[in-house]
Amino acid sequence: MGGSPHRVSPRVPIARRLSTLAAAAAILVLGLPLASYYIRRAPTSDAERAAGDVTLVSPRGEVRSAQPVALAWRSVPSAEQYDVSIVADDGSNVVRQSTRDTTLLARTALPAGRDYYWKVIARLANGGERRSESVRFRLTAP
Image 1 (spheres, rainbow, N blue to C red):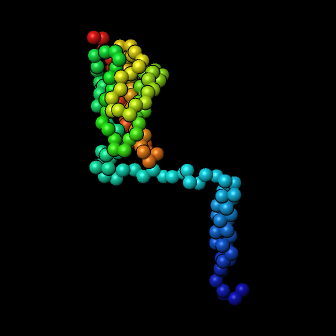
Image 2 (cartoon, one colour):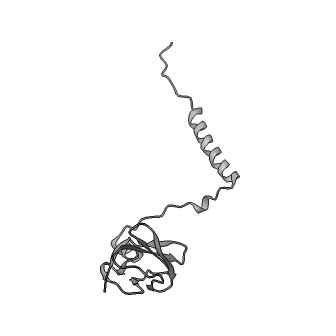
Image 3 (cartoon, one colour):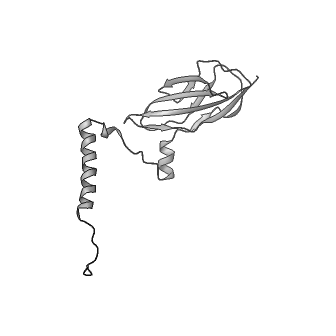
């Protein structure tokens, strides 16, 4: 045992590279849609966040009951459509509507005395989307 240092076989790293290559080839052969998987980059500056997010204007907090309920938000550059949803405090979807405008009158009458949560998704021309936060409002009797 002549004092030669123990060496790792150079074939191990090559075997690992080949197995990775084989896995990638198998994905391509099986036809998985690699192009549809992407990582959405988070906004990095305040200006980019402000330009991209949907900002809900009204209703917020306690709101005097009026039918239909009017919703408003700020426009998002390159938005082609806005999808609006209102969820009741029990988790049920009570409104799902789409519009090209930045206001909407809910087609569904909402009973007073309950909490509701609403949000907007802006559908962009490039296929992307921007989302608002969910905002609570409560309809009070007139």
